[in-house]
Image 1 (cartoon, rainbow, N blue to C red):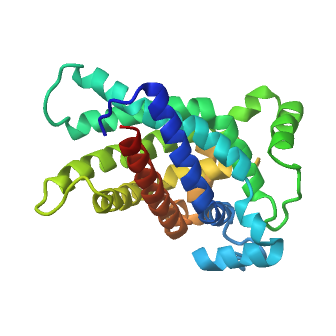
Image 2 (tube, helix red, strand yellow):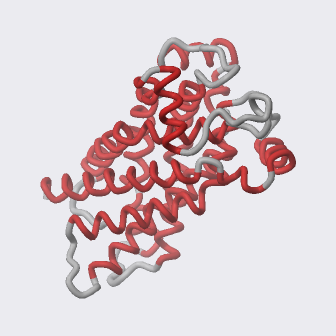
Length: 289
């Protein structure tokens, strides 16, 4: 993923690609959040949401098609900040760890460590946008009254009623989640791309970007799902005292499989998100070069 483009250029390109991918895949993310927030025994033992397509269909039927894009404004805010920073900082941080004059393939460990650092930095800045996005996506499920009239009202209401620090609710699981997923996405994409282009018949092409993007999405969901569930519940529900309380209560009352709720929509979401984002990113970078 080396580039001669400046940091500002990579930030702008990455933010644009991330926003485009966000808009295309947000319905899957909304379905994922609803599945993660759904607790065992809800609605008298009957689960309201069942599977990816069932959840999408239920939301569209009961709340309207546009409800699938709830949280799109803070979602775009998030991708502008988080997407731009995590990808824009990745190459400089990786170069810092291996040395500016290093020649040859960078180790997988260095790629993972660089992505962990950039993911943590980026989401620490972007956490308020993530919180508002999850709050808006959570509205409309059973027993949840509407509290906000759009993204700007959500930011203002949260600060007014809960304080400025409340915008960083769930920051610990969010940093854990995004650092891990960023490492799984960027490091695996970077590494898989290097491996694929060395295979006979493959070049730095759209097919290579497609395969590497799918692989990055799979690794990201497999590794990051447990912290993703805790993050969504911490942000979408106020019944938990802290991150550990959320983790242990979920484990106690719902079992370990609860940490993989929404795995399928999450995979389709992150898989398609990575494919769209990396394809867009690579093509725009080639254009500007």
